[in-house]
Length: 336
Ligand code: AHG
Ligand code: MN
Ligand code: MN
Image (cartoon, rainbow, N blue to C red; front, side, top):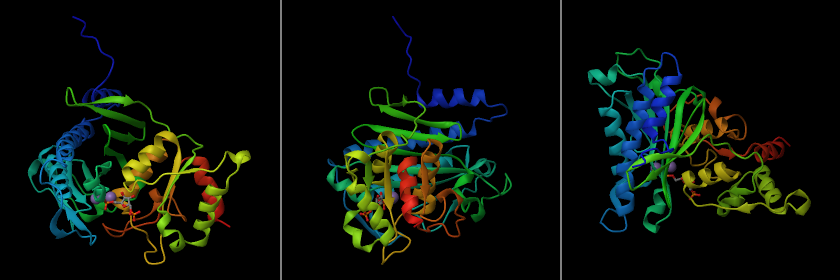
């Protein structure tokens, strides 16, 4: 029997990483394992969504004023649950919850990290069988270990993230996470129920060809943003031809595609909503961290997303994120 195999599972990979870092305690790899477990549970429910009565509104409206689907609640409970029962997380904040949740049991209070997440991103796409996802960012707490986590632990700049990642529940299910050392992607192998390293050391191609934006809002955007979108459409053969427009409406799926293939994703402010729609802490910071580590860029049009000092848990920000050259093209337009 040949038992040799080359593909590392998520757990094997994270444990190997710990061994390469002097003084590492393994708490981060334990946290990533907990997230992988919740992701597998959510994946099972996402796959059943068309079969069982799990669709539809739960009847409530979330703190963002949006309808809550049953799967949002399920995903929120799964991620909160595994992190509370694990040994690495002192508290969480979630797009679905009004306030942050410090874990007050003695094990959790001793933990080093806090985790912020959007448990189900693109939830409007559940009903129509289109990819959805989960997004998370991990920070070292600033409050003392042993005490209860505080709001300051959650209101840190994105640059302070120790790790960030996302899960895309798509034609296959993938978990992608980054630390300052690099970004790696793991595909769920359903035959063994394990995330296996499929995309080692992901780099965002500097020159992409795809732009992702909600065109329906075009006349709501700032003139400079409109003029960049026109540039994307007007490129001729000498400048690489017009860019291709792709917009799924699940940020996880859109940014994942652009990270792998090269591209730019934009959710600008609009006349009605100058800060746009996306949440700094749960959506923008984790992706800004991942894309930056992978060689791309992320801004709000004025400053780097990762440098914004958050003042409230649910604050929103315009977002422009993607391949380095395309981002520089955009920044040149915005600077005019
Ligand atoms: P969520 O389902 O967590 O509320 O997030 C949906 C977000 C994001 O994934 C997507 O890119 C964006 O909303 C789409 O918004 P529009 O329909 O306004 O373009
Ligand atoms: Mn979202
Ligand atoms: Mn969501």
